[in-house]
Length: 614
Image (cartoon, rainbow, N blue to C red; front, side, top):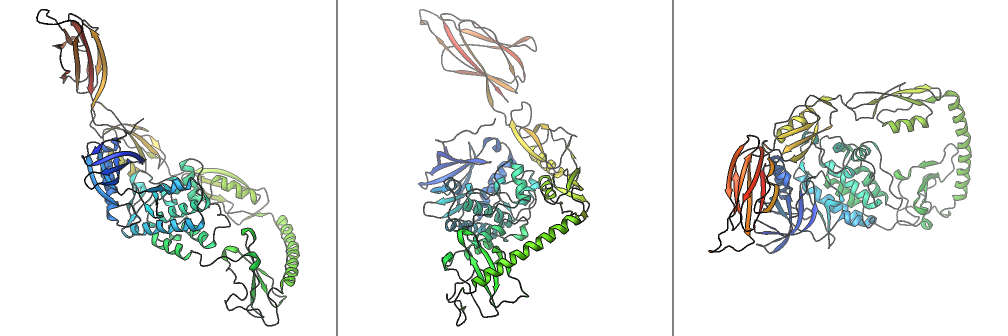
């Protein structure tokens, strides 16, 4: 497994001290730092070492810094500098004193007022980015920072891209975080400002509910739920106006959401409560005249039921039930709305009559329902529309309407497991228990995997993307291979793979000295064989005498001989002498070699280390 070194304690370019590791992302690690030149605390993000060996990733890292620098807004983490030190490329940014929204949510949900305040600032910051045609693409609580004075700062534009309809499929990687990913991101389709609106809606939902709408299962399963499922309803104590903002922000289609951060911020501002809600005991019937409908509202324990009641009984009209989400909240009688009870009538005097009317309606409704059920039983059942549902949804809907689904599959452009056709057609009348044949998508037809071994990682990425495949790269030592080239792929060339699946690549790392073996002895030593993989190798030794060597006592040190076991000949030799550490380098190339130490006198103690370069 690739490991990232902790650079705490170092200073980049002798200017930026890295004092403590405070975060980590896909591209790099973030440190709490200190700018020696300007004497101020900063945040420093350093690219991970294996990405630094890939010029394409370095370019992407630098692009992240340039994107941040383009946006000057108090709600977005500001970038100060960019550089390339021995430790790798880095950029220096504003250090935020506070905590992330993810850390705050670890202590529980926010109140509606708190959530609205955070969401409004978040959307204002996104509005500035959208005005520059920049889409964040990874809005989530971990990237929303809360300062100690209550301000919101948005950071980590690591997967941001210009808002010009760029398809994530072109990058061969779906960028974003599954729990907060928009449906179009999950499908690998084009992103835009509405993509950030969806993610901001998920963040707002989590602030209100204490958890995101979809959180369990694998990354693919969570992404699929964003595409297909409706989020669970928020608690009844969340104000209607705020619920409406969440519902629109989480629309499956981008065209049904707020167009950008500015539009969502404006909606949040209008959702601010203008007054305290009415208590259940204060709600009464509002009359607007003898022939005008009144409204009765009951808000006990967060449940709202709205009924329209004619103030003058008209037997030709039945009371109308209004859905709570579409109803208009009633003003209490005499509240200054212009609605006053008619002279000679007491507000609420029509309630007994209304209760009797409601009871009669329920009795009548029960009789009508019985007739409907008997008629339905005699007529069988209507075939539901099952297209567009996953298999589980097909089963559930078919069960409710008393039909039995039978499944087959075929390739299509729809996501795997989604119903794409059915027979009989929706709306057909069949006997209960009848079979409905449902065709599920098995995804697009498989594609032929191109051969990319020997090509650069950037070219391999482009070729795989043009074929409809993604890739995952692992950087590994590859003696004899050019750094940055692909040395292995799975599946192999010419194999058939589902469109959108991932090809695992191994990419050659840049060569470096790697310790191969260490051995030591006194006077004569044993022969030690070792195999060299790289183009060159070196032996480093140190020798000391344990006895007395002086002008009167002459000491003989041992000598070392190097044998080429593949050729069966001596490759070279050198004398071991007392003193500082010495190194001998050999440009021999790969092969099997052996070191033999012989001779020596008066307890000459020696140690050797062999390093291979690949």
